[in-house]
Length: 486
Image (spheres, rainbow, N blue to C red):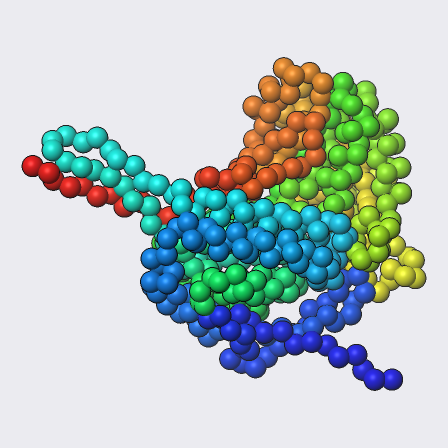
């Protein structure tokens, strides 16, 4: 039997496909089957420097630096159109490389297009101001692009997270170097190709594949990189801040979460249960804003838990391309082992497995990195599964008594990204939302966001907001000009 051929991919630098200077490659896998999807260059510091040099030349070139902002916006809109036109192919590629169900991947591609559409419209609206000062003077501010920006993209939402940070950077007139996660580089490489096809000048968008230390570290510490946008873990964020500090460059960090869904007794139980299930099991729980903690009022806990267990047990695991699949695999076997270790620690510390709690034993799933949707009941604040981000399909359930107890338990975390509130009492909804230490709060809704709404957390969940008008401000510097008219 003839061996199956595996495609080789290249990095995208200076508007061209290039191999690593080292000549090394590494495989990327389909997490649903464990099979190799392709091989990509294993970049090194020299590759990172070459990409930054390319981006710096493009930033200084008048074809990008002096372009009419409205034309820059039209170029970004063309990228959005290309994403929509190729939604089916890009979603399939995302599913194959990440493992998520195809419907979720389609939503990701559409969201990536919306980011480019939104920031395309802002490109010619980045305005300064005039400031009244003493004497005969005209004083005004100008908002200028920073220069080269680096974008370290996570593996859980490879395409949409790249679009979320790269679109505002480009709208403001910067040039970018993207560094995809080693597990999931394929759709970001495709995005770079679409940018070139849309007419964005060579060197404005670059993508370098490889490891975090060799490529990511070299990008962040490069003196010509003026900002790094990272979505990742707290540990990685801390390292990034240290590297960026060497050059006093800016850092946008969107980090982890241990997010509470707070369900009061007067909430619509059916809607709350459906949202809780989606909030923790979408993308196999591999989300920074996953609703991984369920805080439920004591008198309705058992009834709600029964609904959740039935829902978790009815979920269909499988390859993301199969229409019946409702939850795909974890991204890698190492991630599955991490989830299993957390569940084991929860059991050892006294939690009860209400659903799941193990990898599936089905013959059709053994070759992939699957883990059953899991619910742990009786979780207390001293347990690891209550305190630490698992980043997998594990829901930790804790009861509360009254509004004050709910808020105290919700805020009992080093994280503060997202929180959900479920109640039919409008007064309580606003009161609790105001007390929660979270950058995002939704009421009677599962985690939801839009390109025009800020996305960012408090405490260890990050240091800024992405999306919306505020995101553009991170990618510009403000210059003050004072003209003596006397």
